[in-house]
Length: 288
Image (cartoon, rainbow, N blue to C red):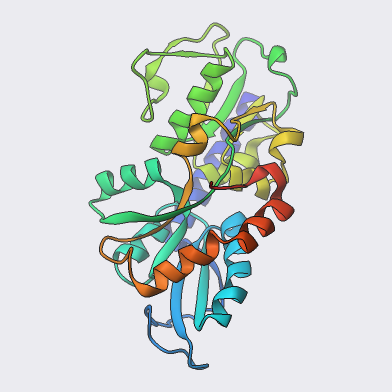
C-alpha cells in the first residue's frame, strides 16, 4: 500500500508543478487577453468587474450574483483558477479587480510571505472544514502507522491539525495556533503519518489513505457533504466560522471603489444567501 501511495504522491508532485505553471482553468464571461478594468464600459455599455475565483462554490455563487449585477449596470466577468497562488497575483498586478476563494488567515499569510497588498473587502460565506473517509469510515478504526492527508499551505494545515487534535488523534504544543505544522505535534499515540499535499490534490488520494482533511470547496468538488459524509467537521457557531470566513479580496485602496461595493452588496444580499442555502445546505454557510 505504501509503495502505491508513494507512486501516487510522485505523480501528484508532477501534476502540482504543472498546475503552478498554468493556474487558470477556464473563464466565464471573459475573453482571453481582455484587459477590461473596473468601471470601463463593456460592449453592452455596462461597467465591468473582473473577479478570479475557485470553481466550487465561489464561481457558482458569482454566476448567480452576475444576473443581479447586470440589472444594476455591472458586467461581472468571472475567471476560474485551480490554485491558491495566481488568483492573488492577478489582483496584486491589477489584471483583476478582486478574487473570491480564500479566508482571512490565508490572505494575511500570503501577504506576509509574498509582499502583496491585498485586503478584505467583505465576508461572504463560511465552509466547514472536515475529516472525510478514505479507506476507513470511523476514527476508532485508526491503527498504528495509518496515513491522514492534510493541506500543505500554512493556515489550512494548521486548521486541519487543530481539528485532528480536537478529535484526540494528535496533541499539539500548547502555543500552536493558526500557523501550526507537523513540527508542533508533541503526542501521536498511533504514530499516524500526516501526509501534506496541495489542497486540490487531496481528494485524489482518498482511496489510498485512511482519512482526508478537506477544505469545504474541495470537499464539494469531491462530492462530499459536511453533514452527510464528514466523520467530524467544524460547526457553524464555532470560532472557526468567524475566523475562516471566505472574503472578497482586493488590492489595498480598492475596497471602497464603486464596483467592489456593488459586488459585496449583492453577494451579501438575501437573494444570494437564499441561493447558497438552497444549493449547498450546510456545506456552505452565508456569513452573518
